[in-house]
Amino acid sequence: MPRPKPDDRSDNVEKLQEMVQNTIENLEEAHDTLHNEDLSGKDRQAILEKNERREEAIAGMREEIKDEAAYQNQKD
Image 1 (cartoon, rainbow, N blue to C red):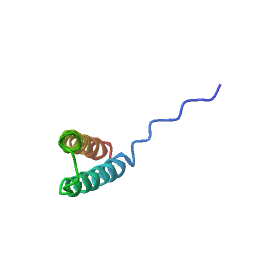
Image 2 (cartoon, rainbow, N blue to C red):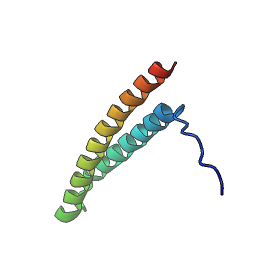
Image 3 (tube, one colour):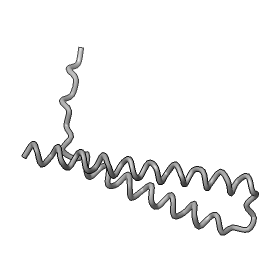
Image 4 (spheres, rainbow, N blue to C red):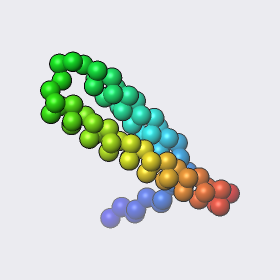
């Protein structure tokens, strides 16, 4: 049976920062899509709701970045 990999958190901050950046890019693209006049009210509402969830996810990831950075500083 293979041994479990050790918990390597050394690059978590970088990974989280990349995830935040990707989510921001998706948020901006969706915002641009809202300017499309061909969108139905239903599609527009779905995009607005998804963007709200993205904003919440970004806030959560930023908190996690703070936690990970504190962990790294504590470890060093």
